[in-house]
Image (cartoon, rainbow, N blue to C red; front, top):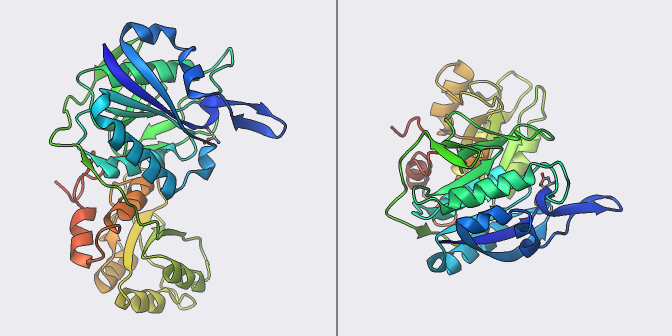
Length: 333
Ligand code: ASP
């Protein structure tokens, strides 16, 4: 019988209606009453680590989650983390960097409806997650949600209400779960690890371009952050019409040692700064890294991980383009 640690962190899955809307309230042990069938294949220990609406999840909480998995790693065969859906993709990405090459599965799940409602996705998502975490062929950090198993670095919340809240971006789902059976599209099993990292550098900012945005705002970002991800349009470029002052600002902060990263606001197919003059010019002049097919969630949390132990530009570049938990295909291959 597999031993699974169920870690509750909050979210809709454990929420009840309060005076001002849904609030996380259902305790970790209570969750297990809703999935009694799982006793047939696993023995679950429930742990109440925090109880947040995941809107409040922050890097210090990610350090707490990673640390508690490290402390309990030897005692269990797999881990299931119940989490709010709003920032679940960020947490899955950051755990992919903080716990690398884990031969034991670390599954994140949540729900669009609380588990104590009559009609809810929560019971299926929790039962599927326990099933996946108990399977000997599972490994690494993944999200199990609405019958899909998505690599921890590839998920994005695409719907605020429907059960199929998450998509796997620029990469296929690893498996599907239908009526208690796991159908794997990717058979590879993580090995060599686990390698744990304890700290994050939260000084990573995301600056979203809109047409006509005042250039000075970018200056404030560079003041606050060690790395700034510019979320640009399409394949990726820096506006250079005469009324913009981005080039001067970026040149100044690059010389001050800040890390510059380009990503795109377009969900699918990723950045490619080499296509247009506004991208190619900026990349060669300022040494931008670009996210290519990585998600924003993965890029931001990967930078938090890398910048926790190095600021050396070449080292940052090498690690940023090194594949971790399926996060980047191009130019890593
Ligand atoms: N606001 C909730 C949260 O992220 C939404 C959810 O769990 O679905 O905690």
